Length: 466
Image (tube, rainbow, N blue to C red; front, side):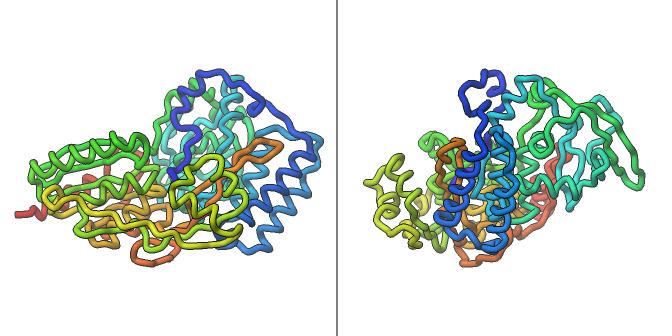
């Protein structure tokens, strides 16, 4: 499993570094772009675990044909090429098969004085709401519904942005758009614009606002907060210990040391409840998440019911170049025939020693921003019955096509990420939905109020454990 890729995470730092190399400024001939498009089309079919899980072959081929037919210019920039290719990739409707946002082109644009739409957006109950206002018009209020921009309603705007985002459904596309940010993707879809006429609705009142664009660096990147901000944290409330394990990636030994120390302190505090926070979490690796789960497990466990892979010539080439073939997992990719789908059996993970585990009631917090392995882990804990899940439905499915690998297109050097595997959650359900909480509490991204955590603590205080 991979984390949600964030090519722009920590971008404020990256923007201070000069961009060099051909990737940011390159142009490609029409023939080069067409040849790479053809390579991309066949690679998606030949290497994705199940390319037509969510779209018919006819629809996919039609999109490919339409893109190819419209490639009539003599040359294309990296940005234009990425935009064309990602629209083909996103047609598969798989969140783990994607071409990243064109960060190099964006950084070059920023350093050249580029400007952006000055309003960031969150999606609440199917409506686009002002999440942050970076414009000079201070009458624009957080939470106001954005009805239209420059005469186009939001549904039409999203119809142009969504094809640039890989995801299984609109709910997840909007979730990813919140992470990547609306100003960045508005530029990606429509290019630079200097002035915006915005129509907003607050309660029963509709207002119109004319605002100017803002500088990428000074006006946006140095001010924006990141949604995926999970950090290692341990704290204590009257009725519960609170543990945020951070994302499931990074220095594995440091992570294990933190979890070990956290549970030593949790058990010493003897609180009746433990709250594990998997919200705003980019995901990561099961080796990290299983180590956490071992402290609440009462028997050997797996993070899935079934894990299957599809091998291919491209995957084998990547495996030969970058992987340790002494490991059974990577060796299995080489040993199976191209195109073959097969199950790989991960051994069960043992629970921590009984005297080190937490034995009280466990609650796991999730929201739509619990991505990838964070969503899989929440489902795993729910399916084993080791915790009560609290919050809102995750954007990511816990049974999903994932386990990314990547390859580089020969002419444009654009990197393509493809799901080579299929994961089925512990209870065997393949329902096309996120993790559904046992206790539903809506999470709003429009203010600093922590509705889910405060809501749960209120419930625990109202019904204290003896």
